[in-house]
Length: 299
Image 1 (cartoon, one colour):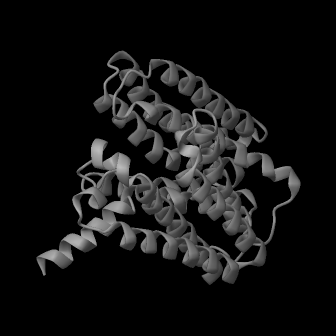
Image 2 (tube, rainbow, N blue to C red):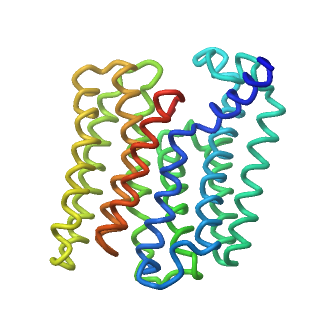
Image 3 (cartoon, rainbow, N blue to C red):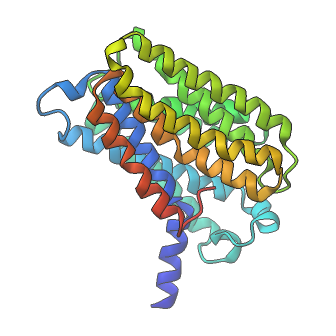
């Protein structure tokens, strides 16, 4: 019984449970951008729920396979992880990660053909990052950010490909997660002040872009601004601290809040394109992520 419990917990650790609600937030935001929340019967439709589950599975599969490809490095730098510890074998983890990706793609096709196509491309980018791009100083953050942009596009493809005028929205998570990935380059050894400064500039670009989007419809100002302020405070506070005390511990905290605060960015973006209660619904995913982060690692 103890071995089974350890194995199950090891599989959960590989899937990074605190991060999974952020994948759902992308889908809800994508739906808000294309206007599904103003259409009766769409919010709780089986297709919408299936797409949320597909996104979660794709994310989980990606982080499991990330540990599969990093097994040799983690044996030296992260020996506490499930694969180096022998709690989950490398072969089992590879099968688990691959199965999660395939089920996520299948669910996306069951939702909509175009959503399935986006899921296939997203799965391809996940594998590209895990196997090759992660170690490249430029392409690593770009590919990781593209995975998040594609995840937002997955939500926007609930009813088919969105109109071209809305595709620019996927640039925001690409830039934002690219910035978080830059910060994570110092998680093990520290000494990444240059990356932190660059990430701070990218953070500012994302926040400014959301502010400009909000100004298109000034009636939404008081709806969006609370989410935007929360987002800015939650990402810059740990970032500034990580710059001042440039140690792995503080860098990990900055990365953790960068990943989890994607929910706040999504809430601001969704409320700017929809209504206040959509933003509140997305923000409610953050306490779940924070609660899970007390028991499971984010990075």
